[in-house]
Image 1 (cartoon, helix red, strand yellow):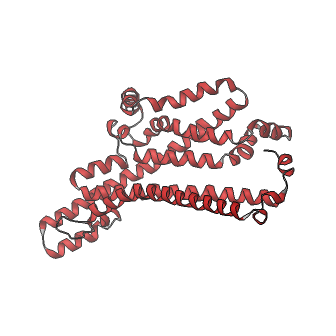
Image 2: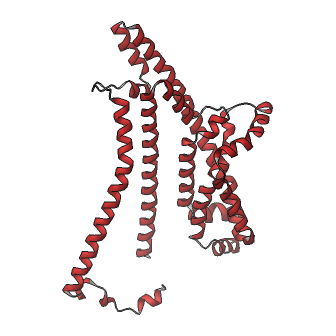
Image 3: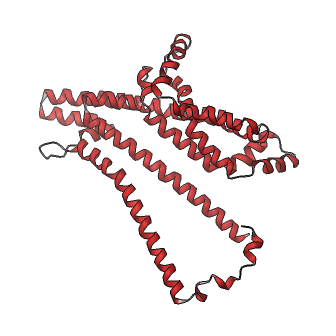
Length: 318
């Protein structure tokens, strides 16, 4: 709807003061129903997430005899040494050996977590470097290639992960002989894995702006193509970039098949390995990873909401 069409509607026709009692009651009833439906939906979704998280917490901290133990959480926080001191004081050799084993497992977990975090950074950087310039250039200069690129990016979504691993195994075998067996080389496989989800997020962001008009205006003012990309397009798709990065982060942190079949150590493979010997520690670590993902999602939602609020306030003041 244009601004002209809005201006021809009398302002007094929609103000609450001009509505009759029946219209005000109907509007209040609709508002109450919307609020109830909204909170019911939020409650169901919240229970869907909270019940498994509480089950993980309960199972990692509660024994069958009804006692609460915090050994797994001490190991998660790097407090395995304190746990060993307590065991030594009691003089129980079996308990001392168990606490030392927890310390070793904790070290394995932090190594896997470090590898996964570095992989997250490399995968996001590689994905943005490949996808953003290509999508912008195709929209500006080669629109007939848009469907082809969409099909190519979404193709990874239709192929099972184990099939991709089988296809990439010879490449990684050669890469290991030529370079090294470092876990960080998994970023190339993960960049393929996150392509469908990142493409959808970036495509929605680019659809929300008139990129052709913006780029032509910037070019007419003397900006280079790099300036158009950095100063005009990227600030307007910032939310889409954050969404694509968050989705990539969640996928890389939770990915297991690639790392396990290619014999690399990541956070997920470490959790599975620890779970075979210490299920409580594995459950505690799984809960920590879920909480990290939840806080990141909330941060993304708050960031998006604050940006929309600033845009709305600017629109009202202008």
